[in-house]
Structures are given as C-alpha cells and as structure tokens.
Length: 312
Image (cartoon, rainbow, N blue to C red):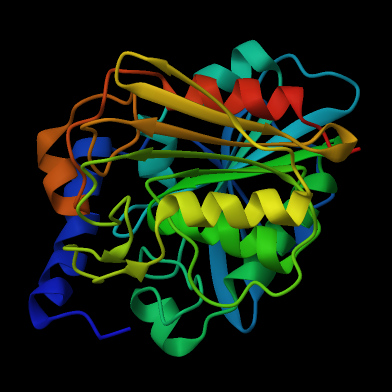
C-alpha cells in the first residue's frame, strides 16, 4: 500500500479542527482506566484505556432502558473521522434508545485503523494493534454493564468497515459484522463463522464496487465487493443467495447454518457514504465522503439485521 501524499498530512491536521468546530463538545463523563468496574452511566460518556503502550479513548452511549442482558454494537468511524463524529452523525444513539442496546465508539489512532494490507494512515504504517484495542474496549464495557455475549456486533464505514472485517477475521467476539463502503484487506485465513451484512454503492470511487485501486487518499486496492461477500458465504457454508430489487436497491441474501446469514445490499448510483445520514458537505469533503443515499437508512438496516442474528 503506497504512503499517502504530502497533502494528506495537511488534511489530517485540518480534520480535527473542522470536527471540533462543527461537531462541538457536548457534556460527558470521563472514566479513568482504574474505574472500569463502575456502573456505566446513562447517556454519553467517555473512557480511556492503555493498550500496547498507547493511551486510547472511546465513547459509550447507554440508553435509560436496557434488558437484563444487553446487546452491544461497536461503531467504527471512517478514515479522518472520530468517535465523536460517528456518534453525532450516524444515528446510533437514537437507534439504541429504541432498540435498547449499548453503542461503543472507539477512536482510531490519528483518525485511522490498521486493517491489514498496509492500510491505513499512522496505524497501518506503525502496525498498531487495533484488534487488541477494540477487544479491550468490549471487555471494559462488559465489566460495567451486563452484556449478552451472544449479541455483540461490530459495524463501520470505509476504513471503519474494513476494521470491522479485520475483527471478524481475527477474533471470536462478534455475532455479526456490518460493513458500509468497505472492503477486506490482508489475510483472513481461518475466520470464525458469523453473520455479515455489507452495504455498498456502485458509484463508490474510493473503494470501487468492482474492485481495484480507489481514488481516495489511501489508494485502497481491494477485491470486488461481491467476491468479499462470497468469501463470507463460503466461510459460513451458506446456500446460494436469493436476490430481490426495489428501485436502486438490490439485496442478495444467503441463509446459512446455525441461523446465520450473509447479505449484500447494493445501491445503484450511490457513492462512498453512509446511507440515510445527514448531508454535511463541509465535513464530507474533509472525510472524502459523498452525498448520502436516501435509498435506505443504513443504521436501521444494520440494527434490524443484527437483532435477527445473535450468535448460536
């Protein structure tokens, strides 16, 4: 994977300022590393832990009402993004209120994730162990709220979606993975079976639907998206997919043993974006995102899929 051009350094320096001005800093509580056993407060909070010698931050949202054993969704921001940006713009807190689950938003080192294959940014160059970091975050949350281990899920956009796939390859933590505008890079020799939902637009120029090198700053060069999804169908020993089309949305769903499923949702004409999220042109330019598709609400679609597919 080639290193990013010099202008990317300027963008990386500018993005935190833009996000600080446009997103703002709402009230929250900060949980020191030694207080992980304290009950998780209702609403938004922040915490810090040290993994691999690096102090790492993450955000958590706990609804007022939770079941006795609660599901958890890990939401991973894209390249140049942040935990706060992901929480503010992708609608997961609102979904958690109605679905009664906890959402966790880890922060990537220097706004990126090490997903394998040399990607991306500082973590990719330095070999940051982001698998260990996200795993430690899940463990820390489990110490603060009663979690249903059969209903722990991970999703993300772009570099975050790629990180979600890396976690699916390298851990046994998750019942299902949701990837948006993403691909799979690096080796994935023996992944554990799990349910997969992938959402992708055919006009994505950063991570092309048909594979090959993208136009984004990271020049991501991945396999065709249908091939990525087919790989997970093989892992899960799924039946042949059934395909339906409604307007610009084509859904190919495969039923798999033990109640699992692997689904690819293709949106004709959609770019590199999180469908259903608000249009925010300034931040989208800074993050390399396109105008969000209105063909569906990705957050609702991912949660409906997750809720229907706990681990067996």
